[in-house]
Image (cartoon, rainbow, N blue to C red):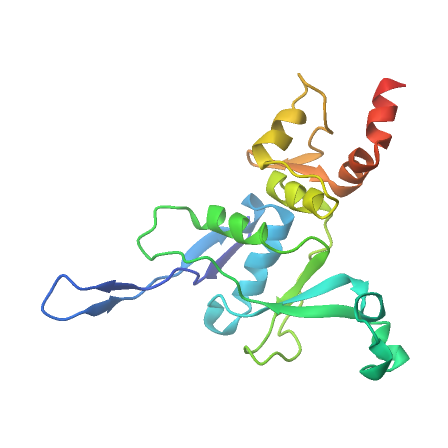
Length: 207
């Protein structure tokens, strides 16, 4: 088991006494093997932030700059335009120091917020950007139910994670079954989800 020690909780302010004081947030130890691939990459990126405090994470798009930037010729050379689009991300949910939520669950929720089509590269040295301090592996195409429904939304298909899990239950057979699991968390292969979106999965089922 691989463990990382990260600081992701928000300090509390105690105003019950004569003076308001700040209650510092401690570190959490997280077992990486208990996380989905995306949450694991996120936890590893945080562990490489200064002092392992959740900071700015660098994301890389599956698309090139020329594919998403109108009139890219005015801003980039052809070589630059062939590079993937990048974005810095730090949209962390508040995680109070006294929260009973396990850090692993909080990480899964943050990982589900990473937009579809973007990969975690690593932690940047500061909010001003710069090259990632240490790159992490976010190459897995396995997705949680929450990531699946976010991906479906980009294709105009909307439902809740609970609805997707229900459709994928073997007793219903209305969507692909999970390809893997991490603990009790089911994971779907993106290729299977793509086949479901296109209708190919349904055709194969009825053949």
